[in-house]
Image 1 (spheres, helix red, strand yellow):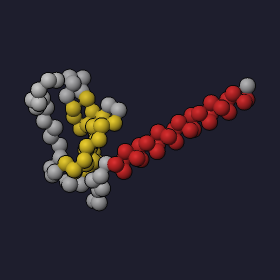
Image 2 (cartoon, one colour):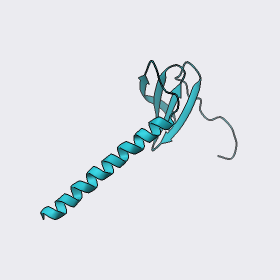
Image 3 (cartoon, one colour):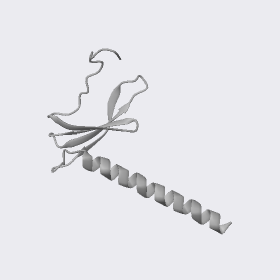
Length: 91
């Protein structure tokens, strides 16, 4: 894309969006409407809401969500690698 032309408007929040995070194939947005929305690509290439989480006291800084995701990925990595090591020792 060589221009700053708007190609799609994302409609879903009812108040100001405070944070955006790109993660893998998803866009995660946090708004003052007390929701966190996960946007996913459709077959046509546009984005649509695939999940909405409502929280009365939503923290609009997605850095916490990002760190939470990193922690989960790290835990999964450690569990998988530990399982692989155990299989090698059993053989």
